[in-house]
Image (tube, rainbow over all chains, first blue to last red; front, top):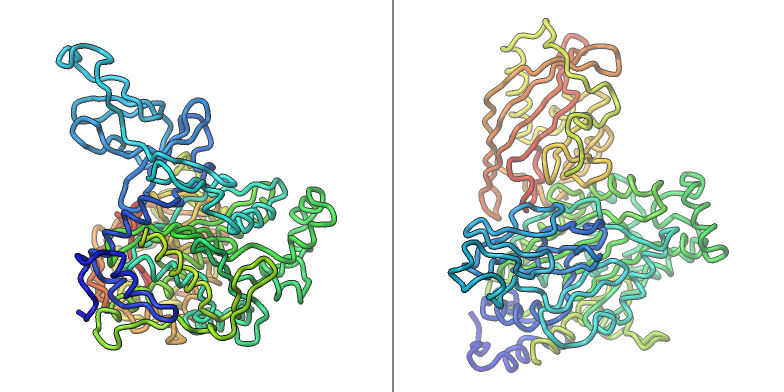
Amino acid sequence: MTSVAPIGSGIKSVVDRLIRPDQVHGSIYTDPAIFAEELKKIWFTTWVFVGHESEVPEPNDYVRKKLATQDVIMTRDREGEVHLLINRCAHRGLQVCDDSSGNSSSFRCPYHGWTYRNTGELLGYPYNKGYGGKGKLDLGMGKVPRVESYQGFVFGSMAEDGPSLVEHLGAAAGEIDRLAGLSPRGEVALDAGWLAHKTRANWKFLAENETDGYHPQFVHGSIFGVTGSPIGALYSDASTAVTRALGNGHSENDLRPEFRSFAEPMRWFGTTPDRVPKYVAAMEKAYGDDAERRMIEGAPHVMIFPNLFIAEIQVFNIQPVAVGECIQYATAVQLRGGEELNRRMISQSIGSVGPAGMLLADDTEMYERNQRGVELLDPEWLDVRRGLTRESVDENGFTIGAATDETGMRGFWKHYRTLMEA
Amino acid sequence: MTTSPAIRADHTGRSSELGPVPEDWSYHEVAQFLYREARLADENDYDAWEALWTDDALYWVPSGGADVNPETHVAVIYDNRSRISTRMKQVKTGKRYAQAPPSDLRRIIGNIEFLGGRENPFGGIDLEVGANFLAYESRQRENQLWGGRTTYRLRRVDGGIRLAYKKVVLVDNDKPIPTMAFLI
């Protein structure tokens, strides 16, 4: 397609050629060899968001999930510990668990009846004399070697060693805390189910778009216009919101400067305290004088590398399928102790996200057009320079740009490059 | 799912007991109405399609099963009359890009079955009808075949038939599905 060197010359030099400070080469979204490298260097190395502990609330609960191309079972064992099992029998490789969710202390492969505890340990295999008797086989289901949770968000790393989850999250952990801090009990649940939206685009277009403050007025102008939504103004040229690169590829649209200037509690949620009095009372009881600040500043809009996007009241899990295909899983945030908000969060999410959503279907249309666009040969490069000359460094040392700047994308590419060149 | 389909089959809060098929409906007029509704949806005739609905309308496309409670669980679509109106206003801007240009679309409806009568909030009995469908959608992305089972509730209003309820259970609603921005 281009003059860029083939992958055989070494991924390091390829990535070096494809990513510039202000441009990214189109082939990085279309080359199957690069996608294969990404699986190894990113998806099967770094911390990947898989699900939430609230999806398996009781001992022996389980739910099927994806970690990139891998079908995994998120289980809670009888002691309460969460595991991520690779859904593959150690005998002939079949899928062990067929149901999408349930409660069971063990799984039985339908092919030859091998059974596994929900920790992955092999429990038994029929006609065991053929193996010399019981307990002779040193086999078990594959497991995601490292599983850690933060505020109930479960992440898995396929690498035995590496940075801890907290190290990986870095400053983004504070954004998850901010979300949990909107619950009077300090606890978020993601137990309202997931819409699964098949998307014919490379996963990176989604990751880049999530904190792209430049597109909302254009892509979402149709719904902002007919509903009179004030969201568009948050991403206007006049907005005081900032785009922040949080390090490790994470980024956010920090809308707090706008909400602080209005100083209206619950404005972030499009309501007023008198319409959600029980929630406001519970917040005041839980947090005292700090409750008002929390309710003014609202929820985060943060993209956590490579696949967790918290969009105020929705959470997205992006899972790659192939170089030109991924799946967006979306759900509504549920705040423990915030029941007055929860049903409305579900209703708003249904209206906004998923395959028929009045916001996300339009984003997805852009991703898919984006993917078709980069198949064209000229110009070869995508431009990510917006705001490069007006960036600054905030009091915590993070690079910030204006509300509509591509600061988040540049942070994404910097970290992407670090992982791919490792 | 732990949701009980029998109890949660109707999420509008009204009586959900299915009674006998009301007497004053002919199969022919019902089939004609369903075909017309399908044609208006296929042809993206938004105003005429929207005008079919009653004020207490419910347009529901569940996800993750046929009877998952949309008040505690996300759905693909769960529109009351007001949200149907918003959806139509958005698409009519011409900048609802997931449907601009609109999908080219044709659907077949079959297996039309009178299921019973259901009391509505105004004291009358709505006719509940089930039907299967296959819809073939052409977009630049690809062609997509959609299939499922629709439950309709029909009501006579001012001498005409109106649609009070349409629930579309996609056969693959427990799997990832592509953008579905047309009127299913």
